[in-house]
Image 1 (cartoon, each protein chain N blue to C red):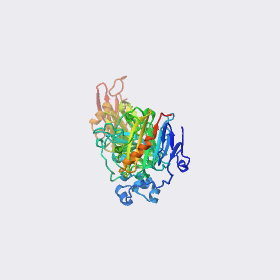
Image 2: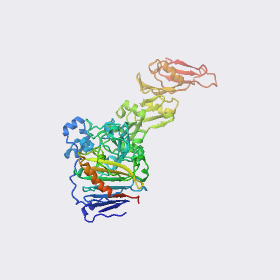
Image 3: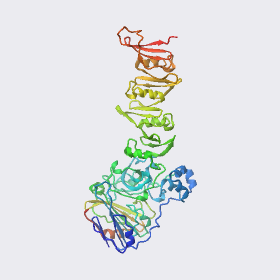
Image 4: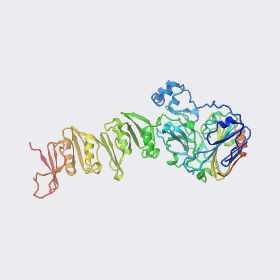
Length: 151
Length: 449
């Protein structure tokens, strides 16, 4: 199953659900930024951009991913110096890398630029002790994801 | 835009937000088991007594507090206020009430909660103040966060004595819109709130992030409602106004309310509206008892004067500030008379002393004179060398007593030849002082029996 939105294409592996939208810009006339959520649990309608409302429902083997795009003029800043979609490994995950730390949860966060677009990739795993399997699950999703130019 | 949503997942599509595209390989299932919002179930009575929050809880949400099972934490500090909730503490809770990033931390990102009652129904912005990598950096890290061993603060949980027991400097997360030129920061030290978009006053971009579930997060050391004072502060520029950020929440005062800020105060009474006092004037106002003191409520906004000076008027007085002199308080008829003479721009100049009780009245010294008041004589000014001589003679408590008239020209002709300019004189209860400009001296003329 494929999801395409605003230059991002995701061929969802089995067991994933995804949503994408273009955020209403903060200032009139500015372009909208992409927000993509993917998870191995159902995505409720009301979700925080970095997963509140979803991560609370993660089981030990579940994963939540947020691909959050920044304003185009943010590209080029030091924070986004890394290039291309990351490939998170087990060592990238920590129980502290969470907007809201939750018992057993584990998170990873990456800032990067792809196709001249600045992004943050935030991944939450339902279990830190199972982060190796969780990282592999995320890896399959990201391997099936491409980021193209902003339309 | 190309959308290929799964036609077989109607439930999933029904859950889409406006403008959202989606795809699912899951059977949609109920998600009403979302939990984790309730804070630790602390005994209401025990907690409230300990934290002194009963009044606040009842004032903020009386119906909800009384009728709903839950905790006092949730009534005042909103959901997820315990350390176990996993959220980060508000800066006001750990920064002596100030809704500002503590030293050593910088804004690193923000999100908004739409439709927030705490911002008058508009968006409420929550800004993360992240630690800095004060001790080291982490080369090659892509997270935008350095190792916790480098952070300028240490992870702590909860803060006893407040209902905001959220985590302090624990979460290694970065929202990413602020200070993007800083490649790495530390974890979230604490968070501040604003009804003004952060890109208007911090080094932040406009990239919108939203988390409406945090709409009611709060601290008992932050304002508990959006009031006329909040609106006035917002109109002034809020955290970057001349007042700075809020310090603790609003307090009830004599017939009104007031809010402390880093650099001043806003006082509110329904018939006067909100009025701010700023800087040393605000400090002096508080020392004088603020709204409940003898000055009463402010009736003017701060009036800027040349040379960095300023003044504020109050119901029963005035406070004047000059950088070389400080803030001085004038009360009642002395203040009224000073204003009638042109105040700081008038012949007396700035006050050198504040309100001084003297004998059966009061007085204040100025750069070029003095105002004395008693119930029997009213308020009168003495000027220049006459005022100096009057003070040498003991002023109001000396032999002359209180002045009984404004300074005037001496028409007696006693010391003058015809055609010469008359001398200046001030009359007192027990005599007069006359300045003889030919002899350049002040002459005491006792009152004739």
